[in-house]
Amino acid sequence: MAKQDTHETPAKKPNRVLPIILGLILIGGAIFGVKEYIYYGKHVDTDDAQVDGDISPVVARVGGYVDSIYFEENMHVNKDQILVKIDPRDYQVKLEQAQSAQVGASAGVGVGESQIFTTASNSAVAKAGVVSAQARLDKVAKDYARFANLVKDGSITQQQFDQAKSDLDVANANLAAAKDQYKAAVQQIGTTRDQLKVTHTGVSQRQVDVDYAKLQLSYTDVKAPASGVASKKNVQLGQLVQAGQTLFSIVNDNSLFITANFKETQLEKIKNGLKVDIEVDGYPDMKVEGTVYNFAPATGAKFSLLPPDNATGNFVKVVQRIPIKIKINASKDVLDKLRPGMSVNVSVNTEN
Image (cartoon, rainbow, N blue to C red; front, top):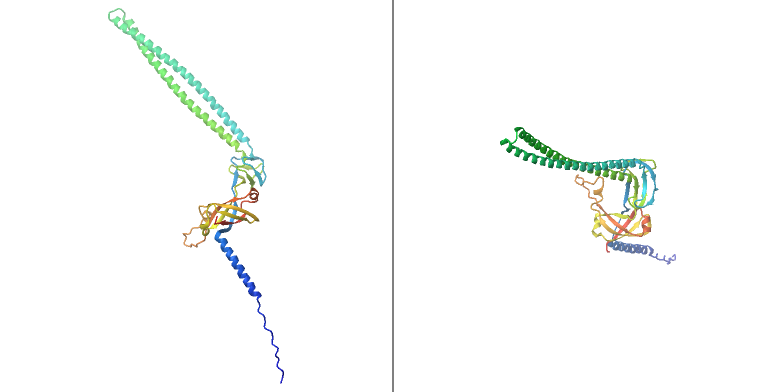
């Protein structure tokens, strides 16, 4: 009988590495989930945000040939600094013409004042003529009354009485003529004064023309409307520019802010004054803080070129976004690195 083999194979030990790994993953996932839950319970985030700023387009207010350019692309300029000069000769000639017209109009005022003085003198002479004619009439009337009594008793001849009557008629006619002359002289004074008013109006109009010509001449110096960086230069020496043509743009200093487009479902916890953490894509290690400033009055879709019309029968509900302006609280060194259009991530702390 063969001898039975009593040697047994040892039992295989269970693999404990895999459960440990799975346990660590579950614990790590739980910790991550709790941290995310706590974080998003206190923060509202979006990556649909960018740096914005005030960009001032500079346009030519008068037309002409470009005489000089005093800046280069992406150069910092100061407010009221002359950056472009348009050939001013045409506008200088127009100013001289307006000034000459003003001198002529002012001379007209002097002539009008002299005419008033002359007509006033003529009026005084005419008034004196009325007084003289009235005195002559009074004397002749008395003589006529006396001769009328004398002719009745035959003390004077009929010829003498007729002469007295003729003298009375002549005196009456002279008085009437003197009064008409005086009236005409007075009316002439009024007419001359009205003409002088018109002349004064003409002088005022010429002064307006001079002021306008000076203003047009001043527009040949194209100045920076604000301090900032000049960009998008679109002008060359000798170029003929038209009024209203854009020459360049200026990104204003100290005008940077963040425009963050939050979903409408995220707005419940956001309000003005909340602190914001800003992460710039171009400088991921640079931490920037900000403050919620205000909310746009409508969704971004309403301001688009073709806003959606949900009354067409094919309505599909889409979550809309509301632009929110965020002020940047950072030093000048940080702001100098930011440029309008740069992408950022923002996180609003809803518990401060």
